[in-house]
Amino acid sequence: MYNFNISVKSIWATLLLSVVMLSSCTSDFLSTNTDSNAANEEDLLHDNLGMGSLITQMEYQIYPCVTKAQNVDVNNYQKMYSLAGDIFSGFMGVSNTFDNDGMNNATYKMEPRWCNAAYSVAYQNYMIPWYRLSLKKELVPTTFAVGQILKVLGMHRITDMYGPIPYKDFKPSSDVAFTAQNEIYDLFFNELDEAAAILSEFVKTNPDARPLAAYDKVYAGDFTKWIKLAHSLKLRLAMRIVYADATKAQTKAEEAIRAGVMEGNDDNALIRVNGASTVNPLYMICHSYNDSRLGATLETYLKGYKDPRLGLLFEPSEVSGTKDYNGVRTGIYMTGNEYKVCSKLNVTASTPIQLMTAAEVYFLKAEAALRGWQAGGSAQQLYEQGVRTAFDQPLGASQTKAGSADEYLKGTTTPVPYKDLLDSYNSVATFGHCSVAWNHQVQIDDNDDDDEGGDDPGDYPDDGGNPDDGDDDGGIDDGGEMTPAMLPFGGADSEELLEKIITQKYIALYPDGQEAWSEFRRTGYPRVIPVDMNMSMGSIDSKKQVARLPYPVNIKSDFPASYQHGLSLLQGADNGGTKLWWDKKADKKYQK
Image 1 (cartoon, rainbow, N blue to C red):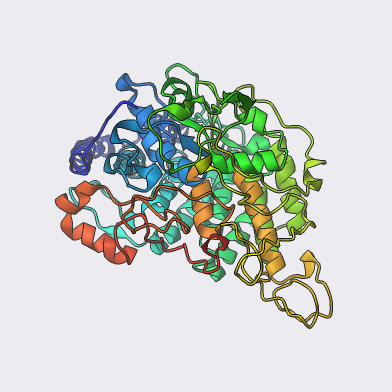
Image 2: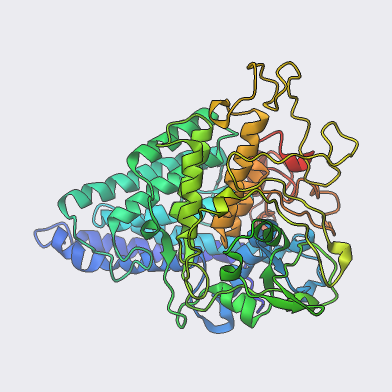
């Protein structure tokens, strides 16, 4: 990784300069466009008044992917995602110690240079372009609407990393007030609704128009797909807050589903890169830097389920004379780069970058149905459709589909133990428990000292089953065994079904480790192998795992009042162990 750093203070200086320059240009622009020669709708369809390039900038920076001198974008991606959500979720493992001798995010010694990156990129490359678009909202409403969706798509990842952040009434300045996370989510919902309404109104009268075709690297200007993405993203965010505000979560989720979400892989939001001026950063991080490999947690699930996607997403490797798919556990002792012999990601410089997919949407709907919400189908139907849609999605370097999911959906196997062939000390006994088949329950009896049996770190707690009816449904005296369709959410069986849904969504989310990490923090699923070396000095619980990124260090010194306000909204210490507002589930399995 090429080291590149930027201070938060310099970010705000850049923002302030940008808005001063922009204000002058805007004033001149408006004064020359208030007469009969003002730009009309036809003019806007031709050039978007120069605003289209801002859409391209925002798309290319949600996952930084532009080829630049000193690989600035690739390094930003690495610090934002590869060395945060990607390893915290178990999707990937680091394969060397870097320049800090392994005392970094992977071992919970949170590295300030890495933790600063996402914050810096977000305000430079999401918020400034959006602000510029907002100043011309009345002149280019559809371009603004797409920018609004992109802003939410980018900034929800940022607040889900840090917690409260500057967001409400954003204007570039030297100091910006923090917004509470629950308020940020309310703004997200409103902004997505507004964007979808603007685009829907335009499509009614201009069904074939593609004014952003030359700029939009996701949907080539197809606003009908942007509308679906807005609703799908709303559904994702609604489910995120379910343990913090269940009533609002249900309302927003059902609104999104009724409005129309993604239905097939043609709706997937993918950033198209050309492999030259723009690249998939994972290709360089894995194949050029040799810094990233298959994660141990993901390996155990893909192998245990005999998942055909393993060979599409990763390359086999030879470790200690054994050729197989070999993953790396996060948070282990390394002497250097010895783990680079493990399995590489099967990705090329031109592999599309995944933002959101129809498969994820089906799993979101499946969880909604499991909770008894109106989701357009039963939980089982939507769960199985999610798996089928994921299998039908082109994957990996060859963009090949996994094929039929029929046999996979019957699977009753469970994740395999993790074996570290370089150092057996890092090996882990079976950690995950759930199988793929919807109606298959895994029986656990491991003879430890708790009430249900299970000496492994991922065991189930005592489910409290009522001996009067002899079933395992959380103590509901129903006179016999309940079927999944009959279960109210919250029983032991429904929790196992939730684990199935989230586990399959986890696999389908790959390589979006940030979203997988957020879902792990929200639900406790899937069961992620914990770090072995915890260098957080007690601020992060190894079992509960890392909950957030610390704020950039410059904020505390340069903007102390804003920093203290942010901490008051966070309601906890500025470290990796403080939970976010929506992280409210009390009975996560990994805590038992």
